[in-house]
Length: 606
Ligand code: ADP
Image 1 (spheres, rainbow, N blue to C red):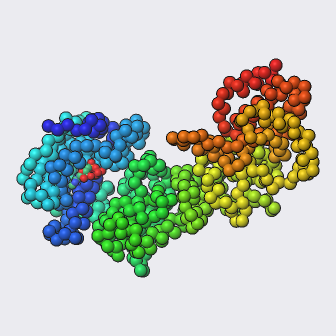
Image 2: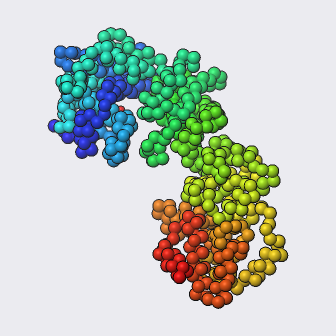
Image 3: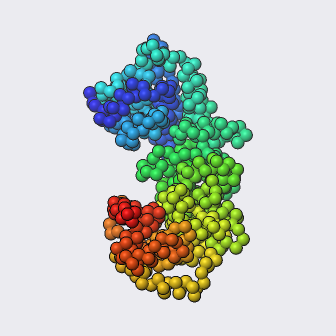
């Protein structure tokens, strides 16, 4: 007896103990494996005459034996060798048992079955013993895999005349809570096939009759398929419990003819931003799947799109490298890119709430696209971005911001910080807001790179509120401010020296209103970029912005500082440090030693 891998054993235990309430999906899982196996052999048959089968020869049969309490699902697909039986059916949760544990503690248990490739094991939810007879294409002998659950399994040679696989499930006895026997009723099985496996491209036969309608949903006329049908198909195929935000149907005739059904999910799969997420559209040619995840059909920035592309014009022997050079494929890709963009714009216009939800899930992906893309790709995404903004409850697009600008507004202003609430109080933004201009709140790390990449909107420069020149009417004349700076020279030198190497410069500003001081940076690295780069894993040498402490000469604290500078240098020293730490805090820069600030406050309070 062979043992299941340790993680598999735990999972199998959980599954048998029925954490999962929809036991009925076991049939869908077994049938979908059978269908995959047929896909593989049918594909082989196109290029390899030794298969000796044509499309119409393939089928999946479901048989019930009430007396023996068995359901048998047979396919004439590719089959499995003894090694494959061992490796494919001996391990569960290949795609990540760690994540499984995490997820199993949450609510969404049902989704796990598909997501983690534990499909086959769902048989144990209804069966106390599962036997798999299989003969692989190209091999002489057949083998039988058998397991009664968590104890382990055996693999032995057996007799089987033809290539393919039979999965025999011995159904559990009824309990008080569960009437397993209902799965031995043909009407019930028929119902399940209709419900879950209707679009399987191969006939599923029960009592000699084909139960499924077979024709893939994307091949049917738009008028024949309702939105609900599409959503149902999406949810089953991509293991989402939520309807997609949008469905895109394409039926193109021309240089290259194809049909496509694309889905824009309304939320990100749990692993979307992780490495193991596999993006790509399924590529079919005449109903035969030629590639499960084809990434050449959509640009990286739209990798969240799911769906199917089916074209008889594609060559079946296409390889991954050839795909990139394939003219037909490129024509399809460029068309799909436009369709997705149009659909997103439409969603943004017509169903803002849905779009915002979509953007919360995938906005980051679009922003990465702006940063890493060039020219055309950037422009493709510009109109799809949303940012929180002062004076607006909901996020706005750049175009919306620009359209609402008062006449004469010189720049489009933005501020970068951890949250809109923090930015709402950013000292530097105060006068901009007072002038009647709104400020875009950039709350994600990538945002600053995004605005730098975009540069402008409708000819107006995107400018940080921490920039020296904000284009606001000057509050003091040039001569006045020079005079003031001259008068303050000794004090400013003192401030810089007192702070040691912490700041490169101390200066007066007329950018502030109700705040006595703020922190700015000179040179190419902003305070926010410094934080970003230093937060990256493995950041070696610390990146340092050249900090500038800016003081508001109109503020009462400034008068106090002057006074102390003249009469009590210790006190002046304490005020300077307190102002510096305060400015850092308000800018969202964590203090190395918060106790120092607390000590300073105490000192100044007595
Ligand atoms: P998944 O289908 O998600 O990969 P399963 O646990 O359902 O996970 O199946 C594991 C593997 O076993 C499949 O990927 C496939 O290689 C193999 N397999 C299962 N059923 C069959 C079948 N009927 N014919 C051929 N291979 C199969």
